[in-house]
Length: 456
Image 1 (cartoon, helix red, strand yellow):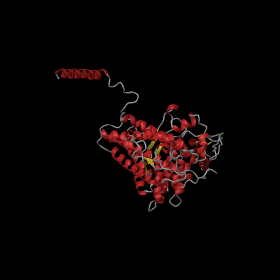
Image 2 (spheres, helix red, strand yellow):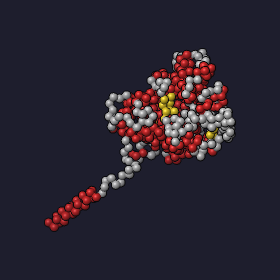
Image 3 (cartoon, one colour):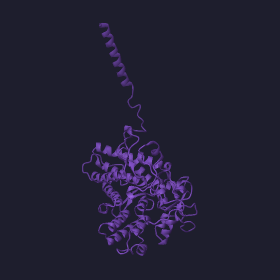
Image 4 (cartoon, helix red, strand yellow):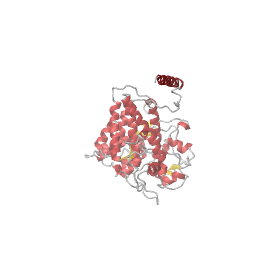
């Protein structure tokens, strides 16, 4: 027994020395990849979230595809020609879906979690605005989408359930309401840093939250709420947009596609849009489109006519910003709400309509263009203003955003003639192939003309 005891003591000593030696010898940092940190500070997540969100929401899938459908642009070659004839398959949208979920939406979720842990609601407010905008854009393109279980992949859930569009819209409004409270909080530990949209200006972010809230309240036909949100949103000098750099590597998404990429000759200005601009000699035409042989020439929708104007500097220059919302959009929303509320105010609607167009023209051209406005816009009053006129001018003002596609599906304006033989203009995107193949919860969509709940 004594001998066994000695052996046991000896074993424990050796084991202790071995374990202690290992602790001293093995560097606990040796398996840490400095290029892939396990924890990223919120100040670095914020610019990543903002940039990736803007790039996707202003890029070749969200904007190029819907702007082809809306006949701002015409696809004349390769995949863009297919889109012009309403051919968009599940594999075509895989990239946008993946980049939105793995990029800005995941970043926003992490920021919100970190902000709660670190008692820093100003960070959470910015993230909630971006997450709400991302959710709204995605649900308006696809319909039902994952949300409640979408960001639990680290817990082993790689087949999240889909929330209904009604649930997504409720979540959007909740996020924006919370964002406004968070951004106004007087108790905040870590000062907001890293914001490249508003350079950490919380007041500007509160206005942006109200603006996005107004957009989705309008879509839900909550006109009184939308008006209230508009009144708390942008002043005439405010903007909600992402600025890009002057080099090719720092350029905005449309310039990257239309000028830098090997697909740069695949899209031209569509004759539908060009003709609308030429009808009134719209001063924005010189910024929206380039001339061809001294004239503005459009390519007919669905054709492969390449002898047409290229995209102008408005969105086809390296530093061209991605517009996420604007004062002009808010005034168009105000005009529509005043016209459609329980007790219409057509005079107020006409005034908001004029302010919206004037803001767009000034922002695009840099000049007031009062003479043109007086001849073409300021002639409207409460006896002549209509929803069709409001949406028609909103269409011209919101070029290079997804908003006209939303408005067309809501209102049927502007009146567009579908491409002959291609069927009706699609009212939704297909679900991505990866979801169809690997997530049994992915809804089954009959065709691209199956209307979304919000636009019925």
